[in-house]
Image (cartoon, rainbow over all chains, first blue to last red):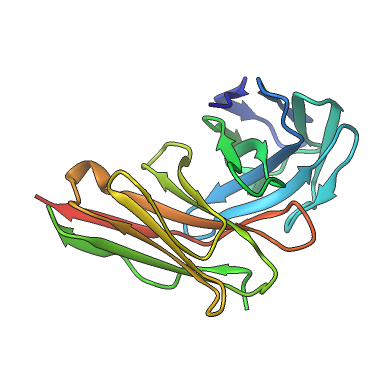
Length: 115
Length: 111
């Protein structure tokens, strides 16, 4: 199975701080995703990437940016954290273009509180 | 219409019964679908992936895909209390690599 590691599990940041959330996968998969999950709203896609240095906006990209300099690493950046960005952030990685054996796995999540 | 929809409310099933979950999607060209299980406070775990029309079985789980009607379903046979969780349906939208999720259905298995 693909292992997806989110290095920061619990963070508390102040309003206005720049926040980096890191995600690393241990397989050679092209596709990586960042979601946030809030009660009653489900998983909402922030950004995704299908190759190194490639990125696509998801449903809620405002206030976020991403970086994918290496295939295995996909970083989510909160340029200036705000309290409404308090959430659980989930990174996923996997294969989506194959006819068989498509797999997408999630990391354990990063709980961010902005105060 | 949302890309992937799960409209049913919480589902309570007695232990040993079959739990049935449904999901519809709006993009007729979508081809790949996933079911995830998520326990409270945890990240989603992949249960199954389905691509072809028809049924796919893995242990107590069966996924069904009907492309003509644009729905995906998940059956959980012999439900166990450990199956109590939220189940998420997701699909890869046609033409890109975007993975869209439904809001999920909570399943409670009553001993």
